[in-house]
Length: 173
Image (cartoon, rainbow, N blue to C red; front, side):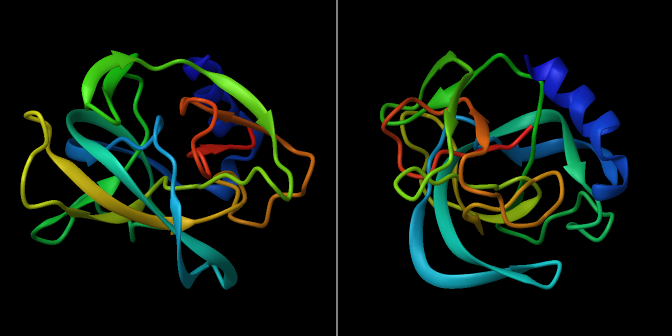
């Protein structure tokens, strides 16, 4: 499934994202959800409600939207980028034990939102939880990782977050 999503990113709308490969620390928010902060965030001139998700920090190769990151994988001190990767398991809330990432789909509605945290900045948290470094990541709610535009209600969303998670991180692939 992840390989299909990656192909969709490359082939579906290659002009929408300037893909680049990063190597090092990154936050993986694929199985997280976000809580609205009450603030707005602007992405490519469009305004969205902002959400905050707690995500595990991993190390290795990851895929980034270079345009949103000004074509640099380097994050400021104490911060990390929230990126996509091909891992099949990762630490997950609430215990932060490593578990398989399980894909599911749902339909975007007025009662079921989603978050896009791909290539947005995160603040590393001071203390690890159960040996896992965590980050507080901020990004738009109901924004497409493919087009960076608003997602229409009724669109199918793909996520690795479990059912019941508020604004699961995912995309309309």
